[in-house]
Length: 130
Image 1: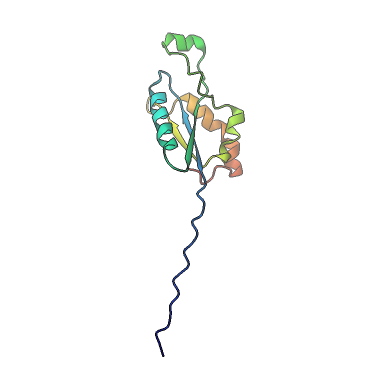
Image 2: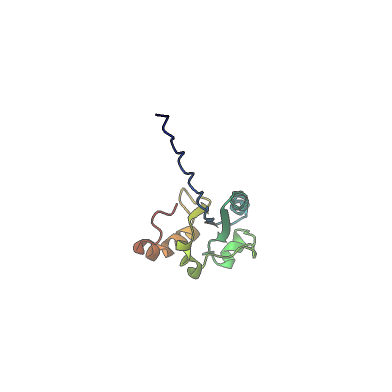
């Protein structure tokens, strides 16, 4: 009787990797946080199977207040995260936030965005999304 032939395990087929869609959301009054957000987006887009989209929080301050604060205009080439776009958050795999602090807290502009996601959280649409 000879040695029993052992079959090698079949190699598992590599599953096609799904492209991860990541939304980078930032608020920047003077442009510093946007500069960092741009670098984060570049890094994500340089990562295989990842794509990033950049959005800015809607401004809550009026133009007179912004003028008194010497705030430059917001970049026109970055879309604002509108209520319609917030409804599409479940389509994304992850979120990255770029924000300054305001006296140890998040700025009102980001808080307004977070408040607008309440219905999505209530329905469970954002559960498990990093």
